[in-house]
Length: 396
Image (cartoon, rainbow, N blue to C red; front, side, top):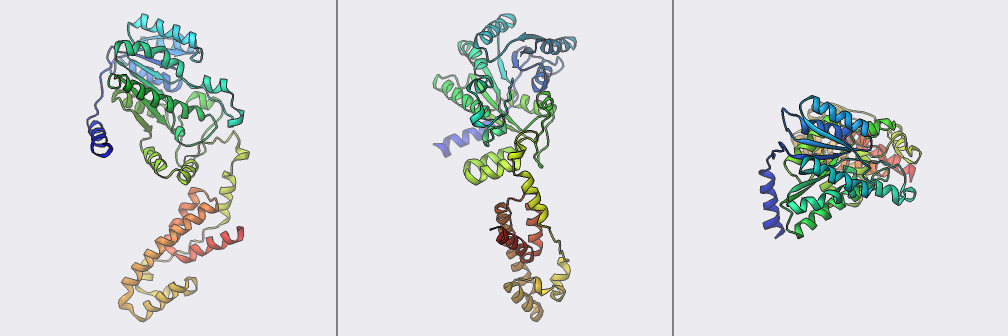
């Protein structure tokens, strides 16, 4: 059933995804006074494009009203409400007012976020509860079930797949809530009528993050702009996708994590690096990794492949391993076998480069320096690997 029914159906659905029309539809956005929520409100209410009517919910009523007025001035339809989503009674009241004002609610985007930077044993139950959007879902779900139509969208994070306690545990919870909700709707026969969409972006350059003086310290993935993230979210909502990642190539990490959980999770966490410079940096081994990489100076003894291919005498045989020296002597004495010897040498270099990566992992060297060691060992083979082995033995 899984391979012959489920997989083909999902593939067919993915190939035929089309954007739905939201003209005249009511879209509720929590946390709409700034950041991603603000930009989503502007894009959805754009009278020249999507033409939806937008309900903006935020604790900052002044900011929400300002966004609403800007949209109205451009010819859009928007209204602001002040509400604390962690207060169930207040959220229910706000939901009823929105339904009464617009006449219906079609899409609810749970975007509001509260960040708590603490370790697991320092997080309070109240803080975790406040950081969830459960009250928002509960406030609008009965209405959607009664009219058998709607879409609930939750802004999660790619960090919801890789353990990091600095503001991330609630992201795991959001993802779990959305999966449970989707299954409940399926059991009620409403899965095709009420859609659930979970968005998992990388860190975005929002006012909430910038106001805290924080930034991710990943070398490989920079802050995303609000514009890029918002456009990705809108595309996912209009195509009614179930789970998406922004940028989309993060799918590869999640798929790998699901297949190889233990070491893959650790390495992916270090690659994405959800930790923040201004928080708990004393507990991070990032500086140690950096120093390890710098101390193991990469001695680029690169020689021309062309020269070594046609003239083995240009190679310093003292650099080579025992097997390498045998191949070197054969190359000198039997030039007709040079092609075969070189092919075998490159195969050996690839194996040595993989061993070098494993040693880099054991030595806690950063991804950047590990990549350089990999390249160097691909080119040089054993002479490069020998430097790493020597360092590894020194630290054992």
